[in-house]
Image (cartoon, rainbow, N blue to C red; front, side, top):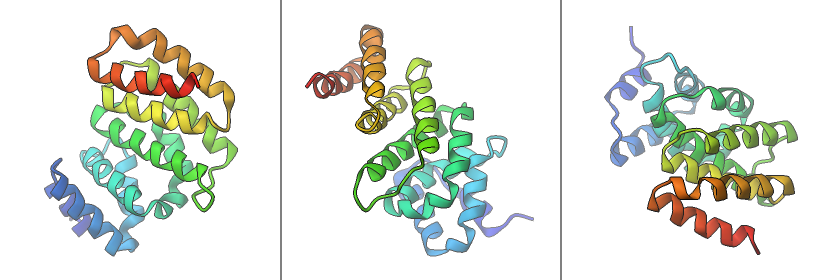
Length: 182
């Protein structure tokens, strides 16, 4: 028997309005957040991608709700294979890195930071879609403010890959390279 949450995820689509409705439902019903995150993180679940789409919006709106799941997220992140879950996962990494860098934001442990950095660097050197690479670069740029070696590694990777990618990727890397070269 399907739970109401599973039914709502089943019915959701990639359209922004649908993802918004599901994320708002989760935020209004925090008792199901754990079940929702478990579905998103279970790559064998047919709804895991759909759950990740809305989890991104939950994190965008209420990132602090995600704190209890950070260790599990760091464990799942490198195991994601579907482009449709990798993009929202890298965007969540960007939210986490920005929040971690702010005074009243989320505090990642050093181990969590290192796991995120490792997974994001891997995403950059793998054959990922542009959006996942761009969010990886943005998150690494912020994390590199604490760990200087990250900026060096990031710069090397994007300079090597620059010519092999689309105009969109090149535009994003040009902007980032300007910041890295300051």
